[in-house]
Image 1 (cartoon, protein in one colour):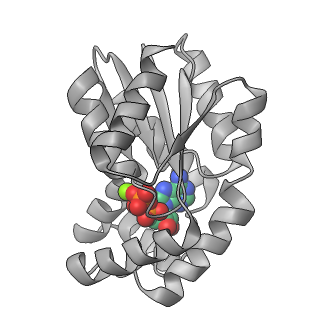
Image 2: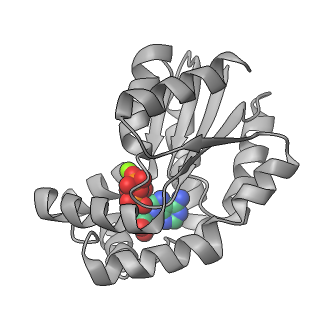
Length: 189
Ligand code: ATP
Ligand code: MG
């Protein structure tokens, strides 16, 4: 089982690199952002709740997010492993993930921290907002998301270090170069 947490600030390239990892290793992909955006698109109750938080640059409450994740995890059959993209985003979520995997006789194999400087994140996200119309990719909301990242999500770096799972990845460079570093980190597990 290859259970990868792909981690990083908004715009760090988690989704892009996850697609490549899925292609190479044949594992399942959970992007919590994609799950929530699909709910919004389908106009579900969950989507309506999620949109309120997302457009404010805030996180969806832990209990709700953990239930959603457990549901997606249970839908995978004969899985070779999972890449967790956008989850965990809080210490509570990290603890819940650890427990969920332990209940299935599994654990996180590695946490890959895509490290990208703030000015580069801002440039990427503003460009993505212009290209895709993602409503949370505007300057005001991006700034809020970065504050939330630093206060609620970045503490996971030390948490995974203490678990012995942390792997730093330089998140600036070509997509191929970054992917090569990720593969090297996975291959040495
Ligand atoms: P990236 O660009 O690296 O893919 P991102 O931060 O731009 O990352 P998503 O992961 O798509 O975007 O998340 C979008 C929004 O969905 C978040 O700002 C947050 O409101 C909500 N969200 C996603 N995952 C979680 C989570 N694990 N806990 C709480 N809220 C979440
Ligand atoms: Mg994403």
